[in-house]
Image (cartoon, rainbow, N blue to C red; front, side, top):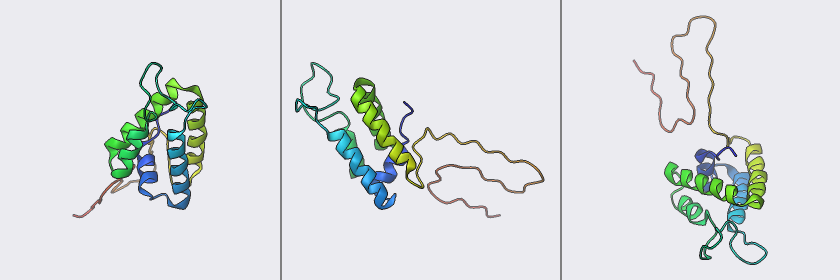
Length: 139
């Protein structure tokens, strides 16, 4: 499974993806917090004491500081770990991911950028992804 991009999680947690993004974020919260049919937290490793579902702590931490790349990365890692341990969760997370990918203006992929500049002469070319701040071309 390709990891979920921290930038997507940050946008959803921070509410910058609009009303549709809020709905997708709530569906992720519900998915992370779901319980098995036996009433135990899903994704709980066997033999471990029962407590909160795996990923709940990271999700809550991201909500508290929605612009934290570190917290978003921790959530993405927790989701990936839980998906590796729980096939039912992996399937549900994949369905959630398809919804998130369909949301206009978001990307949940690995973040690869491939740029090509060709033909003619260019004076200034800027190639970037996820710029957080200003770009100044002053002289």
